[in-house]
Image (cartoon, rainbow, N blue to C red; front, side):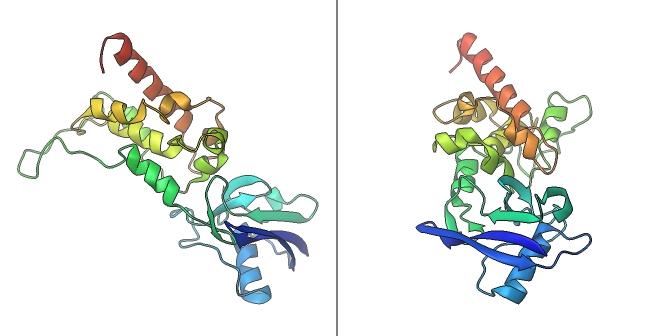
Length: 236
């Protein structure tokens, strides 16, 4: 049997509750949470959708580390036959293991995460090749699915509520290097001010814990270089 401590409560407060869960071969953390909800306490609240690492909605804190629970096998993270499962750090708790993602997405929007096209549907399709400047950098972050694991791992986010966070800044770096982006300077404007890329302490937890093996730290460093270069050239 596994000894599982699960956070129960809301943003107003709560406590850990202990469960005993049968241990099985090839068992994931999400399997454990689902067993508790199905067989021990049907009131347990949590999120999941795809179960195959595509949606990111099942992310939680497992033994103090942010993870996709659907792709995390119990045997790889169990400590002495025990597990501690909690909602993602740095986000308000709605109930039990379900965190409120609004602050995460609000910052994604604040960083200008949506594409601003440089052409209309009536214009010729721009030709993007392997030689197009910035293509490698732009492609490096497109597999981000906004699971918020990097956001939960970031100590800068924990200490600075205005900090945009790794996912939003990585998205900005992708847009900055996109040849189809209409105003690359506006991207730098959005991410180089208060709460922007220069608040990053370069600790690298975002890259360490990214389940898709992306590198937000390098993206943020790219934004720092680009904004500093513009400043010293007398830009805005």
